[in-house]
Amino acid sequence: MKHNHVVPMKLEVVQSLYEIVNIIQKIRNQDDKASILALARSTIVGLDDQEVTGLIQSKSDQGDWYSHLIEQIQITNIKSLLTQCRELCSDGTPFTALDAIVDYSTISQ
Image (spheres, rainbow, N blue to C red):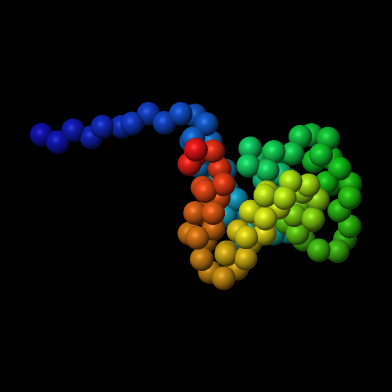
């Protein structure tokens, strides 16, 4: 008889994996305001309520929400990560983008 062993995962790991998948989905629809604001609040980007409010207020009618988020991010490595993920997804290589996010996240630490 074969036993399947389920390894319990820490909630933080599960939440991070969920957010990683969501980032890939959000990159595909860069002008979905709700999705991009959720990305901004995620543990990977980490904006607080005041910063999200500033993000909303500073958005002009020009450009998409994802580009606006990247422009407003002050932390260089997060800005680079989001830019790199967009480039990788637009090249048709979302799994490479997934690797980049995992490398950046606390999952690999």
